[in-house]
Length: 84
Figure 1 (cartoon, helix red, strand yellow):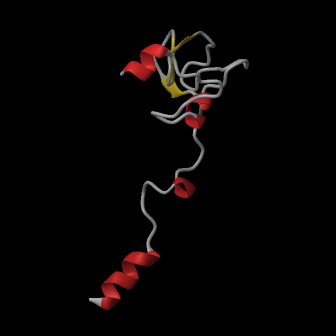
Figure 2: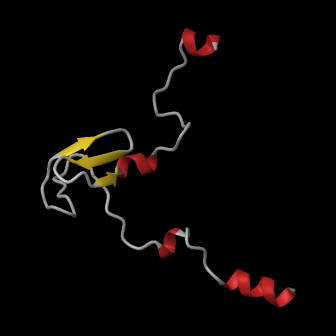
Figure 3: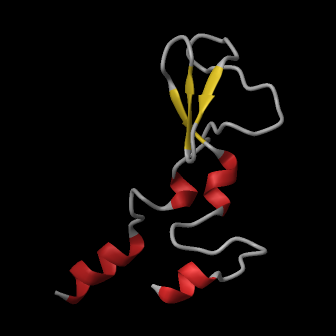
């Protein structure tokens, strides 16, 4: 049993960011060419951008710095948010 635990500790997990490799991201205020078709027309959402020609989706680079449920800078509580 102890040797099995030691073997598991030496292995890396597939979700480990160090083993993911290169990740293509959509960057705001830059020319972003689609990795599939090479064109640069995008539909940009909150967390991803989709190519207007071939529908390839890329994550937004800015969305990686924002987490779900986090407050942005300059958030001021309002009367409506305090009432809830």
